[in-house]
Length: 580
Image 1 (cartoon, rainbow, N blue to C red):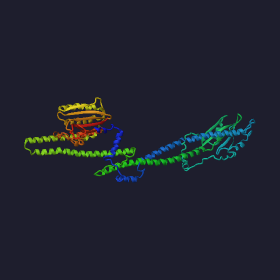
Image 2: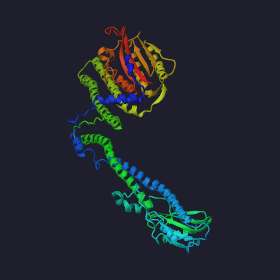
Image 3: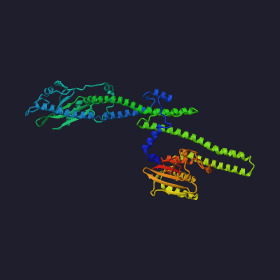
């Protein structure tokens, strides 16, 4: 009974995968070398090349989605614009410090006790002081008196020239991408920034005067605004003090567009990386698409070629699916599944053809006997001969009826096994009920019926009615081969992940040459007295049901010793192994 070791765990994914991989290698599975592949498939591959976007919607989707993800990422970076916000904060802090330093310069040139009047120039020469200050490039300095009246601005006098600072890098980068997209940035500036800066209305001087009017003693006013063209301007106003007394106000404005130039350079770097990333993404997408779309295209083309050719030809050719099972991914699994499905389909077609041939052969035998009996019936004169011929006719008609019924059941078995719903039931209880009923029939025939079943239940998930059909067939077969004084024994054992149900009898046993044939359709090894009483489909149907449940069934002879296989058998044994 070592065959039982071949029973796998029920519905084990790993085992099923392994079994399907084995099925791919054997039988009708076709490993297609380059020289044997269909010419149409080869022509399609050559026309397609590595990847063809106009022929592969999947490749276009892969590239499009990868680019969309990158565009969203870059658009988010430009919209959030954290670099610009950081620059704004730094520039605001710097211009406040610059204004306070300039105020310190004015305050340092004021007398400590003498009266100071910025408007008339008492105590300090405002123009002379302003001309000696080095202002940042593009900045404007305004000086106001206590009444808010503008005294002078850096536009009215020549300020000191800034000394060049060696080692100070000035970023004047401007690349092709920035130049090309400059107008786009200006048009979309409202979309790529969300800081809600106020827009300067009127001339700059009036805006500065309004800011100066808000300066209170010991305070500094700071405002960041935009020009109508969208350039950012920083303005700060702070008081001038003689001791603790406020004698005037200065205001400092930065050059318009300082931040925009720095941000433009930063955007240029982002765009450069974006262009490089797009090129890399498209290249990787093409490679990815070629490893996904091309194999799928081959699989689809192979199926379509087979379908179209078979639709046009009277003698259809076999569909040949490319072998991609070496790939350790879903495409490899799909190829294996499709090849397995095609192999299973052709196996089913071959089995149906063989079944049809067997049916025709089996029906011809009783029909020939009927035709001969009917022809003889017209010629015989004796009543006893006519009676014998009528008995033959009756026997053949019942045989045909039994054949048609069994053939009908066998032909519906596949579809019914798929349609019926599996349920969990007690396998031992089902076998016990069968043995109680069939044991009574055996005892009426003079056959001893023995059962040896475990006391604890064995729960099994499957089709209870179909498995009952298997055990009924095995037990009735065993009884039919027994005579008065023989015995039939039914026993079951649980072995780890499987259960064995065994039906034994003390009949004549099975001829050695028939051990491998008893499960074939229409094969029947019966005593002469039982000729024609069985269709030979019972064991074939039983084998199909057991294998549909993931189990195995086999037959063997019971011998007095396993060492001598030539010894006369003591009976036959049928073993059903089911995974649990």
